[in-house]
Length: 255
Image 1 (cartoon, rainbow, N blue to C red):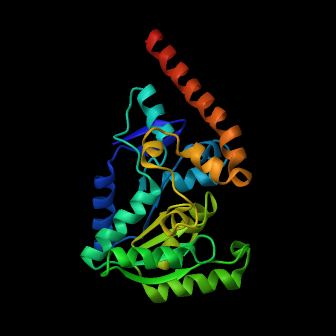
Image 2: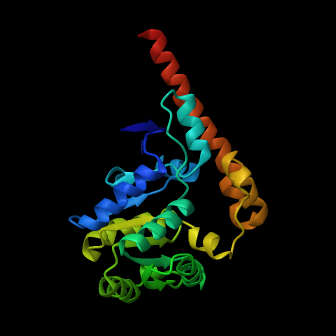
């Protein structure tokens, strides 16, 4: 089942359900698929980017990585089971991959972030088979030689799960463009999760994550990079949700 939030389809699944669906598909490996993990910023980008919207429409799973999306779903009387944080999804999938013998590849992040995240996860899960990590150089998406090199690395490694930390919408554009060629069963866009897992960027305390204040913690940690996203983006997101709620309320009154 799914809901419509500001024109974006969100799957009504729990973290455990998402993991089961992803792992089962990775094991079967029939048709390459990709998973997207939207937050409020994604919802804003999707309002005006038709290609981004097409990518979302064809995703295997669209899971809400953001407490504001969960709050919005409750306001609209179509509640999501809860937030599926991209970093939690990444860590849990690596745990299950170690248990089931699935190979993983980490692409993106800042220099050394994916490599350090892989080392830390392998310390936690000694059976985790990381078949590759790679941090593409800035501007790689416009360099045909670099794009071909990345594809070659991944195809040679032949992972079951490909974690892509390139930031939105770049990671979604890239996954959509190459996922069939790569033939990786499941590719997953996880934003800055490598930095968070490796400790390169501090993660908010659990209470802030659960209370919807993780954005504030991240803003304080990286104000220059994130101020536009949160200071300008959050009110815009609230306005979009309010507009949908108003339209929904009026439709009920006139029906």
